[in-house]
Image (cartoon, rainbow, N blue to C red; front, side, top):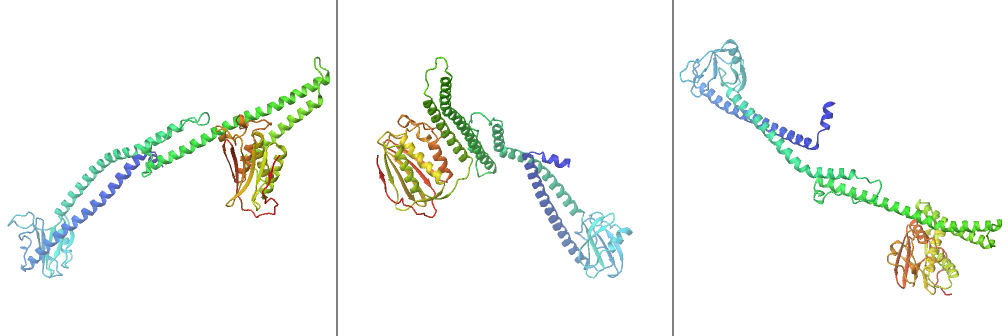
Length: 496
């Protein structure tokens, strides 16, 4: 277990170098083993060919003597013997002590003679270990009477030398591979270290509060997706992009919440101050406070009621937005938009007789799946926005059309338009327009925010385009419901 723990603490560079060196060592060992075996087999084969030739020469000298052992060409250490017949033990045996022409043959002791006699006499070469003399390749003649053996000492010396050369070369190669591999792996991992340094610096930033500063990125040169290190860098950059987007969204959310709280407090402060003032004025009048003049109690109570009503509407709008933000389910049913538009325009005409109101409806009913009460509120808010923020005499047109399976409701007016710097923020809560579209009738600034929230909850989209003389609010709702009977399939134009 301690060993495993130490290995786990190795760096990636060390593990890569050790793995590469181990692989080289395995390959070198296999190559060395195969080379050694092949060389030994080749040398033994050469030895067997020379031995077979010497045995054939001995067959040409059938005399019962050992002259064939010292024949020219036989190496030092050659052993041989002769027997009366194949089954008889060797009667004569000798060996060449040194390779000198005419030198006398040496004898064999009992153990050596016994080992030589025990060699198979089948005419094929065999390796036999002779005590004190080492391994020999032994072969008998065809008649089995003559046995001749060449020593394998030279083959073993050659193989041993090759093994030492292989071990030395392999060791030197492994050392060189370790040094070169360490340098090459270090260079290859340099981009990864820079990626890790970037991640470390980003991890040290304080991201839980304050302004969202641009996060450091891995350079493009080290984020090449064609390499593994580049893939890590590219993945880190994508993660940093997501983190920055999340932090930016968090900051925007916090800013909106702070602005929302400030706007709501401002909107509620005015009616609360009015209610408190009129209530205090009424109380002083009833108590006959010194210096207090006559108080119109009915007027004071009316103002209190009006401000309370205004504050109630504001709170209800805030509550509706909070419920939509929380994902509260709506009451979905098949809803004919034509009927809703007719009712909304009729109410708007009654409230704003100084405007010109037009209806542009298709011949067939336009049915969507939605909450009728909320969709009615969308239409009422859009028409009230046009009535409130345009001067008398402005023409306001409510139009319904089909776009594929979607239903599109448009509210168009020919008023002065929306200021360019205000246009991107019209659907924000407590948004304020310019002078030409200023709030003059006690609007809370939540109408268009409610429109956006309700349409989004229905899976739709609301857009606005504005220029002097043409402002269009477009509400797109997904269709697909079965049509219902409706009497709204007509074009209606109403004027004050």
